[in-house]
Length: 84
Image 1 (cartoon, rainbow, N blue to C red):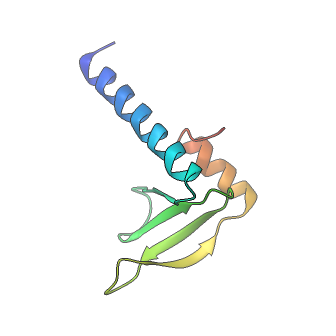
Image 2 (cartoon, rainbow, N blue to C red; image 1 turned 180 degrees about the vertical axis):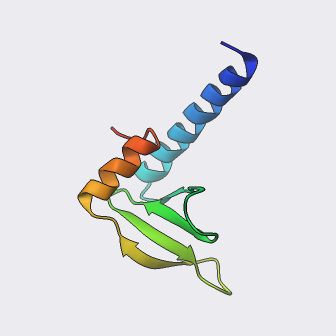
């Protein structure tokens, strides 16, 4: 394993630990994707739902665009290696 691959593996493991910690505390976990328009991301909640959101202008809050359905949620978790 190259040094870069090792660093990437450790970084991914750290993000997954942070995700579990945040969700266990009831705090949403932000999932960024290069495929989304600027200012949009996903918020995963401890109840298992994932919302597509955009940063609200002038605040540090998010406006919900829509909630992903069960199939979309499952595909997104698999895509990002977050499947349980």
